[in-house]
Image (cartoon, rainbow, N blue to C red; front, top):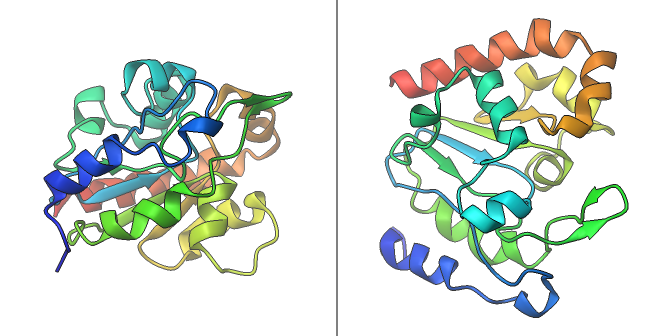
Length: 195
């Protein structure tokens, strides 16, 4: 049984300023959760556009992710069916090649509390290496190996590469992702939402 109601927890999360002094744009935790959700998406951290709008995956990466999942915007943003909780809830800042990693304080502070409110989750999408390293202890050394064996991941987890436009080279090098992994992903998404 959760310690506090979900509504109160989400208020706490959205008011969090645990590492605000280290964030270049300040704190703006982005999360989408309802206790009826069937799918949980755990990604990296919001980018600048998501930080500005407060809408998760509201960027080109999100467009690609919705395409992979074969979900409309309305389906994707239905919090009663799909929860979204990144490893870092706030935009972490930039480095030379993309954004900084998610802040390390965030997931330990909030993830377990949110999980207490998600009794009906059938599928957890782990997008990118940070989410996968945190939740999977599968012996694979690389994201590519892990995604190649996505269908063998311990239920309810399903590892995915990040859908960033920066990953086009990875997608071209690994055509098996679209031909083998995406059909299985779509089936799991459909099955999870059907129940």
